[in-house]
Image 1 (cartoon, rainbow, N blue to C red):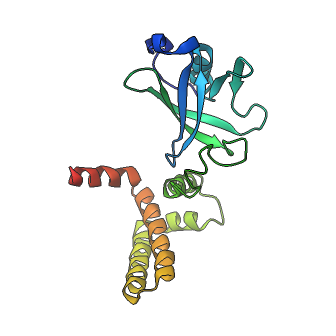
Image 2 (cartoon, rainbow, N blue to C red):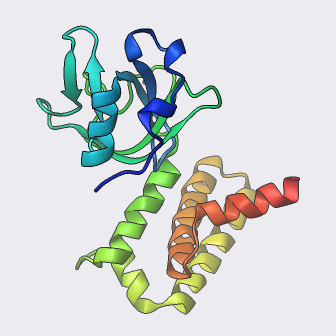
Length: 206
């Protein structure tokens, strides 16, 4: 898949020693920052053309497509430059852990693996909706339709309220998690997503 992006010549090359531009890699689903790499023109254009993130290795002084040895590659979703045109933000779907240590992100000590998991869960639910695998509880919910899914949201909301009023912290977390999951399924079934909620909440905040 070819990824759209600005021309490399549009970057502020005068500020980039050796023509290398820093590339911040961000998970498109969870919004976690995964790593920082560097790209020269060839690496940048290869990333856009092939859809797999390629860097320029300053150590080996050659191109390096992430995952070419480990198999843990980065599927490029979008590429954008910052306001000074001297840094790239590359949003990706990671296929396997990003860090050489086996962690999801190279900033693992600063960002726990659970961060952004709700967005990741949303992507899993969207995948279930597309593929409808047999034996999947999520698939069964979609098969039953919006009315039944909405009913489950209502049931989980009541159970969440009961545990909150009773002051049962652990049970509240458990039931609230059920509520969030079923709400995500309902949003997907009605063609909506977390992004729609964020836009509405941001509108209210403004």
